[in-house]
Image 1 (cartoon, one colour):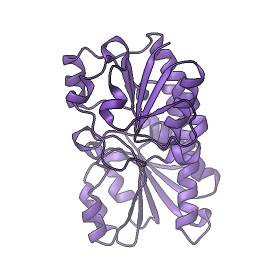
Image 2: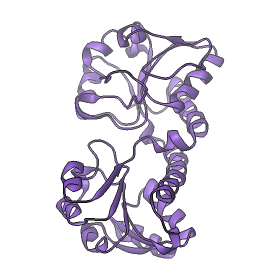
Image 3: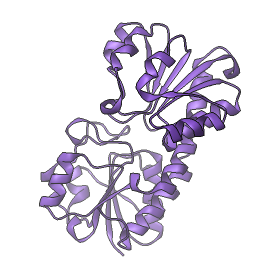
Length: 290
């Protein structure tokens, strides 16, 4: 058995903590709602949570500026710093998170900490994408005043998440455009009933559309200034920090922007938590470290 610190997160991470504890591991949490977790130590500080722990588990949603953790239940922002990680024994175990940033990668190398990224597990990505797609449909149902079959929706990006969202919208009868990066993705989208366009030409596809669902990180989005021309359009941005567009500029131009994070945890925390736990068990066994 080993020792774990779970930092931030939502009910997905609570599920992981529960399963690790049931397996006999020593588990501490911080910045997580652990009211219903018996036997799990609720630490008074980040430093106390990580001290001498061999495994540090962080949420799947991407790190924000300065390596800030996704922690909606925390009373203050949480940051994954070198000084914090130096308190751990993670060189004997590892650091588990969605995706490391360049700065965190340098820190992990200096401290000889193996890193295990959830994003490397394609099966987990499919499970998460299914939950996100269901959550996006729920968001649109709550946000719009017409049946989804009456709406024109443009999905930017056609990875695991974008394809799951597009499939769900097509099944519900929406006129669905897909802005995809390569010809194979576009032909796959066409075969599944969507109208495909090159990602580089997404700004033409969204003209006149009712809703834009963006899955593409800001560094990959082309001509993001076009977003601010879409007054009275709803943009549901589900990409990692800092998001897929300049949210403030878009709102100032009259775009209805919703930056929705943690959708998988809201929709299916037990399902996703179980899948993340499976990934962690593989990491403990030494499979998949960066």
